[in-house]
Length: 387
Image 1 (cartoon, rainbow, N blue to C red):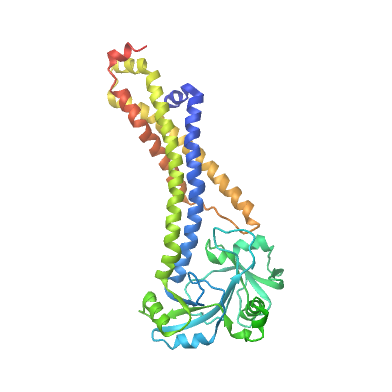
Image 2: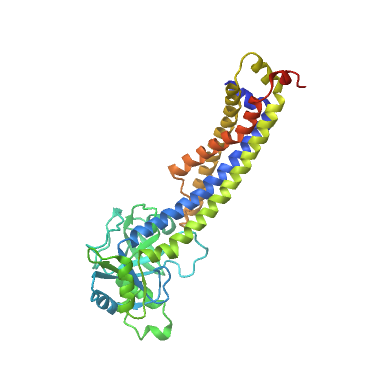
């Protein structure tokens, strides 16, 4: 209590100092929550690419492409030594003309030929209803983040690219790409894919042979990156990507982006630290006679230092907790506002929450070291004479 009374001797000054730390922690929590969400999405992608190779059209970037390729490539790829199974799929945007730029995974349509069964290790669970089956038509399984956007419920219907689909399942929350996916049968996806082609091309293609990518599963012991190079050499006119390609095209740029985000937030918090130094320096100057009295009656230099460090630490604790609370509220409000459009950008993880408060406390203590050291080194006689 004595420490708190000392901190709030000058209430307005103490509150402004704490407010500076609060704003810094708020910035760290909000921007860090965005970085955490993006990192989790990319980590999910890393898990997906860890044991396979993705083949797409030549216009594919980072393994993603809406350029149609033919299912005949599946047999060609499976003839490559080291390939255990190749599975075709269709992936396209849920909205062909998105109204806003997304910082996460864009809402998409996914369909598979089910050849991956028994080979795919990256699974998402259906928490309501059932999963798709090979003979299904006109049905859909909805990702967790699209439930509100599409007003989906099992037994109801959703509109996908102007077509009605019966909802047969809802995927559980994964915090990765499946949350933004609408899974439909391959035959239905192929019809939508053909409808997107130029009119002059539609009549020249067989819709049941069109896909947009092929997941290649390897025999035990094969290196995915080495196999990506081999497949690229043996199969013409395709884009091939393994785990290293995903790291280069997606994960490394995101790492730099996250570092920039955290750097901006940390600078904001350091500004709050400067206000602590200023406040504690002024506090030492105002209490010089008090310090002289304490030292005259036997207070050690260590006791004086601990007193002022404790006061600066208290300001760090209060500012850190307030900043964390405000940051959590901003994240919750932001996610609720974006839920309808499936743009939940914030993820407050335990490590971010603990790290933000800890950093605020450490910053408070560090900011108080110089004023505390100055106070401890005051000559008691000179301090008692201070006016």
